[in-house]
Picture 1 (cartoon, rainbow, N blue to C red):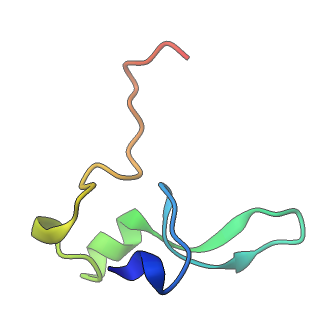
Picture 2: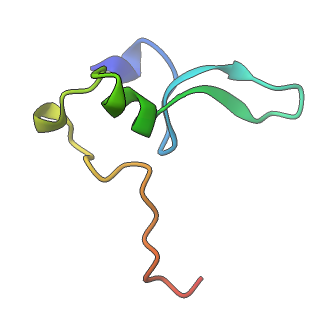
Length: 57
């Protein structure tokens, strides 16, 4: 899949680079779904990027 080609994490579908302070920037999972870059039926982690608000911490 795309993991092997470029950086990804739970927030970013595509990590284009990092700021001087070390923060990643690029295309978020939400943006990737909206732009059709990810087919929802083929994704392993459809809930990626969504926080579980039920956790107390």
